[in-house]
Length: 134
Image (tube, rainbow, N blue to C red):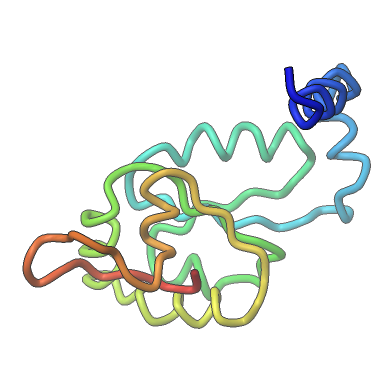
């Protein structure tokens, strides 16, 4: 084991046994988190964020995005090309780009992370719609 590896193991060993409670204790009261719920694994994120004490809202159409002020947003895994097509058809693409550009926290997992890319190398001809920001 290299010294770097042993430091990492030590850091992992020192994590609290109930990490969710530790994170929840540091969240602002009633943090409002929007989850892009066009398709993919949005439900799992909703459950976990709710357990952490967040007020979680599914974003399925433009009215959901503009209905309130969000403290953060999650773009879950799924299929990034499908997310792009749906976001474009539903009029969400430009508002999502504006939200990301605002500097508020946005987390993407799997395809959501691809959707947050500024550019994707090796994509098919014609590409796909991306929110950008990374």
